[in-house]
Image (cartoon, rainbow over all chains, first blue to last red):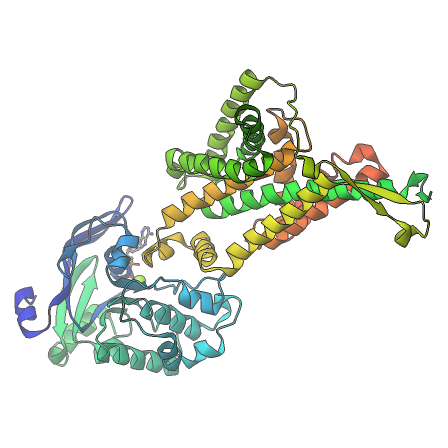
Amino acid sequence: MADSAEINASRGDTVLQIQGLQAFYGESHILHGVGLDVCEGEVVTLLGRNGAGKTTTLKSIIGMVSQREGSIRYRGQETIGLKSNRIARIGIALCPEERGIFSSLTVEENLYLPPVIAEGGLSIAELYQLFPNLEERRHTRQGTRLSGGEQQMLAIARILRTGARLLLLDEPTEGLAPVIVQQIGRVIETLKARGFTILLVEQNFHFASALADRNYVMEDGKIVAVVQRNELREKEALLQEYLGV
Amino acid sequence: MTTIFDLPVSYFGLQFLIGLQNGAFYALLSLGLAVIFGMLNVINFAHGAQYMMGAFLAWLLLDIAGISYWWALLLVPLIMGLLGVVIERAFLRWLYDLDHLYGLLLTFGLVLIIEGLFVSVFGSSGLPYEKPQALAGAQRIPLAMITGNERDMMMIPLYRLWIVAVSIVCCFGTWYAIERTRLGSYLRAATENPALVRSFGINVSVLITLTYGFGVALAGFAGVLAAGVQALTPHMGSNLIIVVFAVVVIGGMGSILGSIITSFGLGIVEALARIAYPEASGVVVFAIMIVVLLMRPAGLFGREN
Ligand SMILES: Nc1ncnc2c1ncn2[C@@H]1O[C@H](COP(=O)(O)OP(=O)(O)O)[C@@H](O)[C@H]1O
Ligand SMILES: [Mg+2]
């Protein structure tokens, strides 16, 4: 595994540094010493089979898994002991795997729900430019009336307003039609160009590796491989073995 | 004088107004119960006792400090709201991860303590509270427009009219705050998925505390209103809250507007029952509850599952 000091020398500052992360749901021990780094402006993916612990890793970062140990630093600040509402306020936002659109809120209320925590978020006009469907459907009374693709757009859009700079995206393409997957890919490229730092969980390896600066592979709650962008070809066989693609 | 079934028309008018007035109390109390249940997952059995405390607090303010009814309308909800905040922080917050039953048992325990305390201090015979002069009178309304008879008149007690009007304003205000404001969208979202709302940087535990405080304040406010129409006894809340629970079951937990409509509707149904067959008026709500439970277990306005 690449030494984090070495990574830092070649890229921007480390935004997220995870070391020895353990996570538990009650009695079940899910993460066994996860370590990874994400640097400023990078798109980093977390790949792995179902049940490997990817979602649990993202939830641990944002503080939604309360039983966690080890170290999670955001721009040098230790967050392992913070509540999730505090972690959000320092600039991290999660787009959850199940999308988490609220049925008792209109589309527009869903969009405005996460409070702005810092400057530098996208304006509503920019969001509607990025996701034209949402503007058309903004008065829909129940957010959950949207199609799956539109709900995914909404789930991404609402965390771009807040000024959070580290985005945790949990399988944003899951179950969506190819055109929408492409659209989401373009959105992620746009966000990267705008300087957002992104930790992307994916099962769709081809989608993910095209966007990523670096890929971590997870298995049974541990990181088992790191593949840099320029190593994709030489490590393809290894990746196929891990991911079963 | 025009009569229907040998009863003067004005009798029907008055029964109808009393029905609306009961509905007004059902609405204020069921609203608080529903909002608390939505956010806390706790069935607040102490709601009736908190309503009773509101009434006694108004009485104490007037009797001891000479503080008027109008100030009591403001101060009692504030004091009760603060008490709610303390109860939530000290007791309820430890129960959220457990079954509803534990919240019910804890608040039921609170009822026994509070009512016992009030009985030993104030006794069980009713205390009178003097309503303010401005609301003491009655308004004479000619009914000629309805009956065509110049001699048909109805005396409408101002205080009953006041209760209905204030309750409607409060209910509408609560509906507006929850359904149409930013803070309300936080509350609705936190009711659906508190963990996710927290992950957006919203302090959900403060929202929960404030919600309970608000619900208790609403109960206290209803208590002040009640002080003007009935003698105060430590059990006045328990008697009422049983009916209010039935109202909540009938209306369902899903919708605020639904519980307001159900409350006033059932108040009127009770009044009609009182006219038709007075003995039935006490049980008609429960009869409706049984029918609704059989036909639509989630309640008239509740969301299935
Ligand atoms: N709330 C939970 N309680 C108990 N076990 C859970 C919970 N959520 C996930 N798990 C378990 O944790 C493991 C990792 O799950 P997850 O992080 O969702 O994997 P992935 O996102 O990689 O598919 C799985 O074995 C899953 O069954
Ligand atoms: Mg997952």
